[in-house]
Image 1: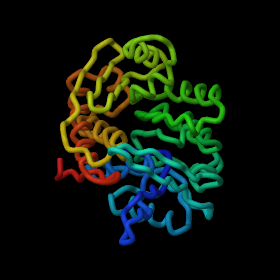
Image 2: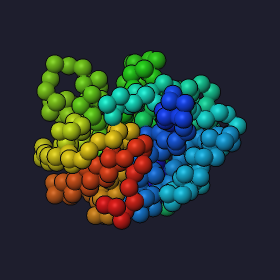
Image 3: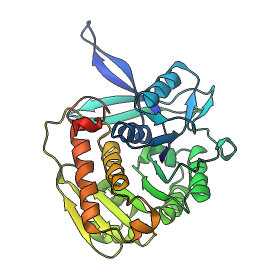
Image 4: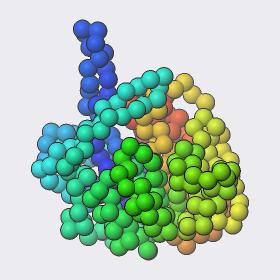
Length: 308
């Protein structure tokens, strides 16, 4: 089982009303939540570890997980509120206003963490859950506790507006990347993480030096490049589709990559250390196919296996 560890929240999506003004419709979302949903729909045995509220939005999130065959046995439930993210869409691109204080997800502590089932062979981390305290330190502690014998992928998906202590955040990311096997970054993430006047390739090498076996760099419509620790590179173009919006695109790309590596039997720590370039190419191509379906329709609505 791949256990996705991080935020689940409600995206409030603007939708036209009969009066002509936009209203907001609640959609289940969150970067890590989206990846778990996409994995479940792709037929991969998947679970989620997160904090969910007992409120009606928390129930909506729990129902959505179950509907996409995501195991919820590692979910921690409380009566704290659900995180809400109000979305603004402009030319297909999303910006967000978050309401996250004292939320069920953000306020997770190490005392809340459950035992991780022996069924869990891989861990996935990412999103704003790595930036917002106290939950961010809780997820870092979970990785430290459970990641040594399991394959680990992380996607920082950096949102500068959430980072209150930059030095502490950088130190947390460095510690987690040292334990990760796969790190996926966008070009914007990479430039924030390594703010030096270096080429993107040199910045990728700086990330590889921190410990992961694979770094995946995405560049939107320009596709993705995978870098292996032995110096090999794999380039994959983006799939050309009519874009409706980009909500969840990177999250479902990650799911496609994980799903293909899982299918190939390569989602294991020792195998990722010597991953063949062709296996990485297959994973990136699958990620691109999955993401292309998601961006071709409204909202973070990942495809089911039969749609690929």
